[in-house]
Amino acid sequence: MKKKSTKILLVVFCAVLLVLGSVMGTVAYLTSDASVENTFTVGDVEITLLETDVDVYGVKDGDTRVAANQYKLLPGREYVKDPEITVTKGSEECWLFVVIDNGIEAFEAADNTIADQLADNDWTPVATGSNIYYHAKVNALDAAQTVPVFEGFTIADEADAVTGWDAISAAATKVTVTAYAIQADGMPTFTDAAKALGLIS
Image (cartoon, rainbow, N blue to C red):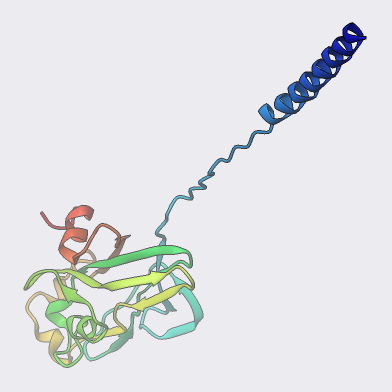
């Protein structure tokens, strides 16, 4: 009888071991892991520079915006020339710059100069006497932002008396506006931004 109960105990013990082995095996396979997925998008800064379409006498011709106009200059005449920079929606916060090559400066009416209008529109020269101007940082992440540069120019009444008026070349009488934008991140000052753009050294 003793032999039989030993045998039964051995079978029960083996069964317990088998159950324990199964449980332990199951526990060993209960695993967990986690991963962190980072999605990166490339930051962007995008601008356009356009002005109102006008005829050669600087008279507005509808609401169309264009990249350039041609003018016929006459003493005493006022002309619409209203370049605006639009920072596209979704662009990173950026510094704006314009370089103004004003070939008509000698003929402008003193009370309505392009330089005065730039100041009125919060454009500041990077240095005294410079034709490079900067604007406060612009944030267009949520909506496009439009920044006016200037509105027009007026040729002085006495411009026909200026030496060389009749001999002025087309190249000398151009007003060229070139716009630049650069991300503000990493550029704490306008000087840092202008140097990064190569506008100043």
